[in-house]
Image (cartoon, rainbow, N blue to C red; front, side, top):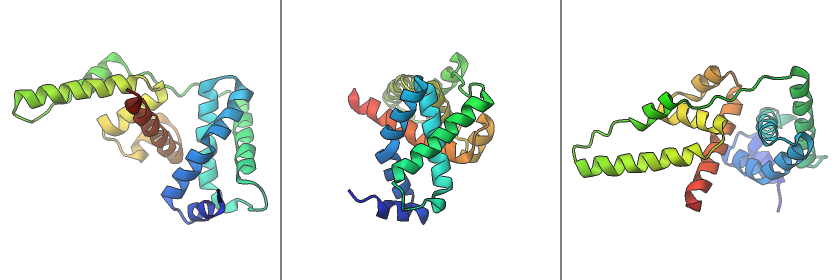
Amino acid sequence: MEIKPHIEKAKDGDQIAFTFLLDHYWNEVYGFMLKRTENETDAEDIAIETFAKAFDKIATYNPEFQFNTWLIAIAKNVHIDLLRKKKSSLFVEITDQENQQAYNIADTTPSAEDELITEQNLFRLLQYIKELKPHYQEVIQLRYFQELSYQEIAEKIGEPLNNVKIKLLRAKKLLAEIIQGK
């Protein structure tokens, strides 16, 4: 499979190309960092940060080198930075109160049957969301239940905008996989 056209499209800002590259290389970067860190959460954080940095700096990518080698080099640097900073955890559990607020979203449909169906579907969706890791639960909750913009989410959780976009993309993909598996 030829990757270069996707890289060129990504350099031009094509979101579909970014998504393709993320999907294509995610397991390789994540797997590499999982072996290094022996911690799923750290490996996932590093992979997210790696793709955010790579997409920010994709114009600097040198096609003389393999794209995956470039990504792994970025991942190594992100890991070193993480170790240097001894970063405190950025994960926030969704509290029972927040969960209840999400569950209590009102349905304005007058039909009692429609209301019951909607509540059951929302409850089922919340159950699926609870299967995600806490940091994915948080961005889903902020984006779709509190309806915050990407920028507002970035400010609220103290992460760069690109990290938020990638976390949401990954969270939606994982959520879809969970739902399809049921």
